[in-house]
Image (cartoon, rainbow, N blue to C red):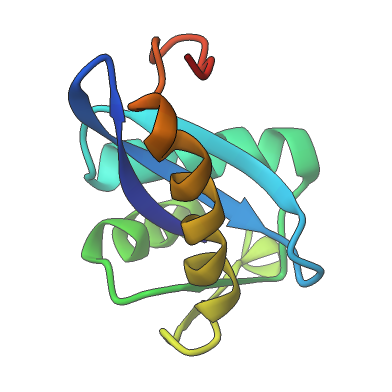
Length: 119
């Protein structure tokens, strides 16, 4: 899981993305801020749609750590998510951000935050 920032209607927004071990996108979320609340909303959305993962690899972001810690506190100990903080293991999604930004850049960003459409 990682986040990057992109332009939406001329304003910078954060794009949260999660990928599986094969590099396939699991889920994404566009948000105006990068904090524990936004990270928690992203993780809840991904878990509701795809189930609770055993392990999540994140960078050293305090917001992501706080969100996962809160989610672990809410669930039972058997359902705890292992938090793995390692920038090198997160390299696959970091490299994938380049493809997303390369696709967005010529079109000057998304036209809407509610329905990301290139244009």
